[in-house]
Each structure stands twice: as structure tokens, then as C-alpha cells.
Image (cartoon, rainbow, N blue to C red):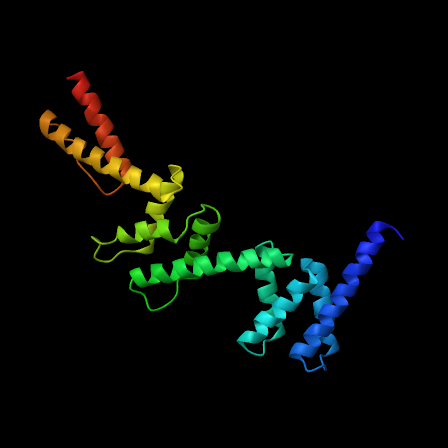
Length: 223
């Protein structure tokens, strides 16, 4: 028997054991054949390890007695987050816990009673999973709403997207940038006053300050 055949045989045995374990733990040993067929199909479709499949049912049954569609929806979510092994699943749970805390902090700051929408939730996932931002960084963005009467989710999006576009990845990076921004804003005010230029001063975005400051510097040099 080839090494590949041995590995395949071991995988099949583990899958059979997983189905037996699920049957005993959640179906009192009388799981219907349709569930067995579904589990076998999910093994092939998602390529889960046996431990992951057992964990899938543990998770779903901890919520309630789930419908088949619910179990498959959770399986789809895990698969979409590249979960195949138990180590993958542990990493996924850590990321899930992190994003959940951040989403809760955002909804609280926005004064909402309901959770973020599916679209908003996906954006927060992107901040954490793609941008690599944690709660410490996003808390800085949350604190920037102090002067806002009715802060919106779009306000956070603009701040955090700007940080990412500028390559700011740590709290130290952001704090340094914020100090430089404040100084540039102060300098722009002084330059405008001294040069008596009628350029409109607008502090609503970082881009406005950058452009104003550069324009005023050029005007001063040319004068």
C-alpha cells in the first residue's frame, strides 16, 4: 500500500470515528442516515479535519438543537475563513473574539442598541484581518468622536482607511502622525495669517490640511 493510500485510509477512519462521536454526543446514538450523508458530504466539500467536524456540531448544539441549514451555514463561514485543521479553528476563534469586542466597542460609541449591519461588520473584519488593526488602534479612532455630536460609522471608515493608506500600522505610528498633523495644522494657520492668503482653511480631512499647508509653503517661498 502506498503512502498516499495509507494516509487516505487513516483519514477515512478518523472521519468514521468523528461521525460516531457526533452521533453519541448529540443524537443519543440514533442519528438519522440523512445527517450521516450530510456530514460525509461536508467532509468532502470543506476538507475539515475530524476534530473540526466534531467541533462544528459541539458549537452548533451549544446554541440550541440546530437545523441542518444552520450547521451548514456555520460550516460555510469556517470554510470561508480557511478553517481546515483544529489549529486553524483555534486561530479563527481568536480572531472572532477580537472582532466581536471591537464591534461591541463601536456600537457602544455610536450609541446604538442594535449590532452593526452585515456590511459594517464586514468592514470591521477587514480592519482586523486585512489591515492588522487591534482594539488599541481602533480605540484611538473611537476617541476622535469626542467632538462629534452624532458620529457615524462612515466617520470611522474615513479615519481608519486614511491610516491604512498612509501605512500606519501601530499605535506609535498613529500617535506620531497625529502630532505631526496637529503641528502642520498650526503652521498652516500661522502661514495663512502671515501671508494674508484667502485660501479657504478646512480642517475636516487630513488631505485638506496637507494641501493647504503645501500651498501656503509654496506661496511663502514665491513671495
